[in-house]
Image (cartoon, rainbow, N blue to C red; front, side):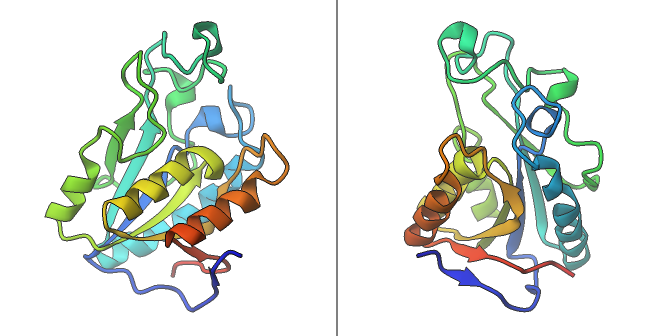
Length: 200
């Protein structure tokens, strides 16, 4: 059973990081690998971005940044259609996502023969956040059952307190129970599932 928390908005501070995962055009409606209602995360995340900016919390934004011959693409035997190819519109962040100038961009999946779902894998992000004395990571974005899931698990493995902003993520749901199964898995791993909580 998921450990759901419904409390007042969190007090973010310099020891917090807001980590926004892959809110890119190709993962939103009309994109090459669209997540159902994926664009609905944008206004929620914009609220959290404003809160993080106001409080001095760190803002990190990950993106799939694939070469044209990436191993995850179906033409190379991978599971996914071609998506988030470097320097294309599909790889751009959703135009309504209000990223401030200080937001740090982390690119993943940049090598043709390596598929990286997690924002932490091969990016040096964990070490960088630890050097900045970040203790808590608040995570939202796309998609819950793939890149968000992997990012949360890696955050926990690196020793961070991980909080999933449930209102700020959507699942692909290739199988009907993927969303709940993922929430249960993340909760069991030690992630706090934040439902009904909005930043202010």
